[in-house]
Amino acid sequence: AHEVGAVVVLDCAQSIPHFPVSVKELDVDFAAFSGHKMYAPFGIGVLWGRRELLEKMPPFLTGGDMIDSVEEQETTYAPLPQKFEAGTQNAGGAVGLAAAIRYMQGIGWDEIQRREHAVMVKALDGLNSMPHISVLGGDAPADERYGVISFNVEGVHPHDVASILDADGVCIRAGHHCAQPLLHHLNLYAACRVSFALYNTEEDVDAFLASLKKVRGWLGYGA
Image 1 (cartoon, rainbow, N blue to C red):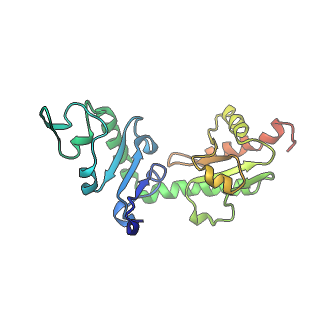
Image 2: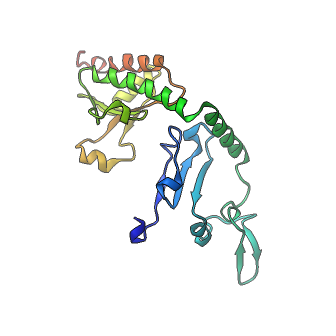
Image 3: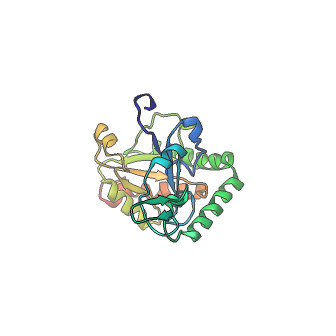
């Protein structure tokens, strides 16, 4: 991409709580993620960018503390990062994000990945053993997967699956997952997605699979 002059922007919101991301190794120009994806409060996030590009960019918000000087015909903006931080900042969110980062660092990436992989494998084995369940990318080796599994239940709309599981206290996501072109390529209109984090347990997986087994019967399909 850089060879043709493109600016590379990495959205790492989904990956940042699961494994380390190196902007240097990936050679990206910008990287961004939302704090709540890694257990911080809502309303806080991170934008990393190459200094030379950030310095060329105009501010997208105006307000207090983002200017150096204001004249009748000219305005000089404050240096980075203040140029992009107009007005009163979300101090509570920033403190919460820092605490979340320290919490994850205290556990360690190896332990986080070990926990997530263990519950993912248990769920994947359970899904593959159930009739009328199709796992997207089901032939991918478990050691090449992270803690996300997309699947569908034969004859049942994904939103109905999610609603039935929700009644049992099991939360999954149903829809196109911000990936409509991929679903179109797979000849699908929607899919179910179960995601795991460092706090999930084997008991959570058991509850998920037990609830999923009831879906087709609840809608009159039998087992």
